[in-house]
Length: 89
Image (cartoon, rainbow, N blue to C red; front, side, top):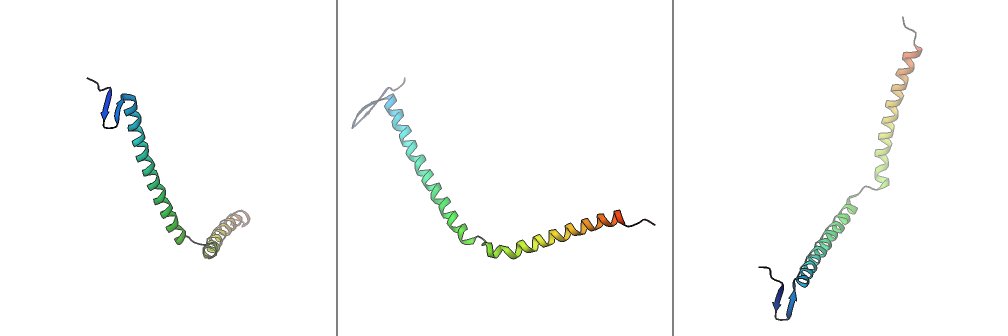
């Protein structure tokens, strides 16, 4: 037996009205969860902003990495040139 009406102290509601109220309650919960998620993401972003590396702090690391890459590239090119130009005995 399916219940088609809901009797409350504020009145009687049909099944469609009850479904609409249930969905509204779920939307309210979803909005609350989204607000909590956004707040936690905002807190995480603020904590990450305090720990990030500035461009000035990154420059020495970048210089060393680029220098090492250039050194490896020069070594490879030099080895290839030596293989081609050095006469074999």
